[in-house]
Image (cartoon, rainbow, N blue to C red; front, side):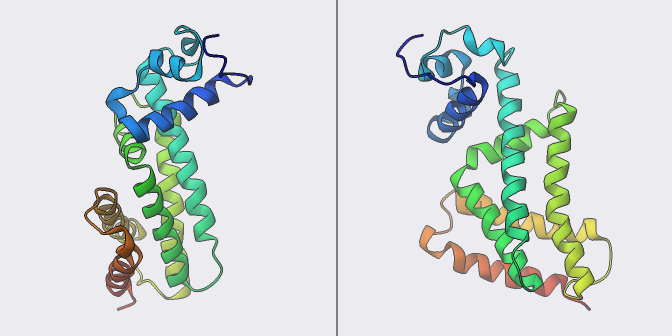
Length: 196
């Protein structure tokens, strides 16, 4: 073991943690199994016990990202209170994730739609969508969202939210003004989905 940095028994988790850090700091193009092995101090062949190639690593990173984001959004959506508060909590959680892990978010959606995406990865992406859509369904039940196809309403809300998150992650929304700008967006979205 080179460098003596790897001391625990979960090499797969250590590789994914290192890959997440490398993704944040160096971008997806810089990810390689050999570099990750060097980063955590194992032989260059060790990662192949868990990932047959770079694509398998990227798929695992994307899956982990979907699982983490879904958990964060579920926790935010569980916020007590009216629909607006719940949607705001969910939106802030999504934007926070997008700003902190912009490369990961992009990787998640790229890998989910890749022709070779695993069923597990596609299912994780669908769970994220279902989690977000549940807030819209609850809004319809409470009378805060107009009746109609929840898929279309949810897509409209998600498109606005994802677009805003992309702008914020790209530095096009000043960090100190992100919450205020997001509140404006949410106000417009809420007006658009309010009962008619």
